[in-house]
Image 1: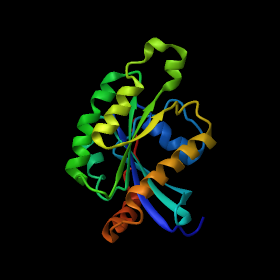
Image 2: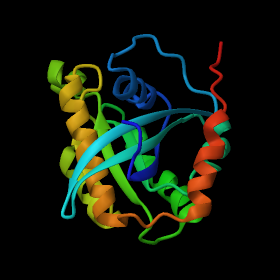
Image 3: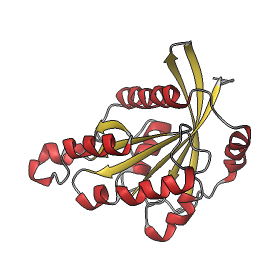
Image 4: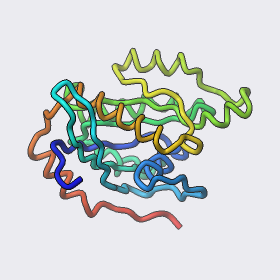
Amino acid sequence: MSKAQLTYKMIIIGDSNVGKTSLFKKITSEKFENNIISTIGIDKRTLYITINTQEGVKDVEIQLFDTAGEEKFRSISISYFRGSNGLLVMYDITKSDTFQNLSDWLENINSSLGNNDDYLAILLGNKLDLVEEDKNKREVEEQDAQEFCQINKMFWGGECSVKDINIDKLKNMFKSFIEEIYKKVGSNIKKEDSLKVKKNEKSNKKKCC
């Protein structure tokens, strides 16, 4: 795809070890990688998706950012919130603290972006495979997550296993996310924010040793 009709900036955020980098790499490289080292700062790749809208089919370029979840790197991640059209917020359904910490992430989002119509926050629960193996590992009920979305005006992305999900199913899931973003923000992208995305091409991609 050479020319996209729209360019969206989308950031994956959440606590460390909830599966952000695994999702980031699987959707962009079409394979699941084991033993992934935690992200330091920001990693970025470009993803092209064709979506269906009321105006017809549109080609979308996604500037996708993976962020560090560790507390010491959080300020770096927050600095990239500005200009975001979509925020994919992840938690681990087997670790209640990653769900409880969502309030802090939303506070950071609101302080950086404000409560407006320029972006859509999407919530996704990961590591469903662990619960399917042992139901006792579940620490966050899906209903609680859905209620959290209703209260905080987020889009519920559902529960999944980034490890096990078929790449075509993952792409369709991502497509639905982008279509929801389009419904919310359309082509309401400020020129300066679009330029900022382009300038972030050389973002920090170092990994810890």
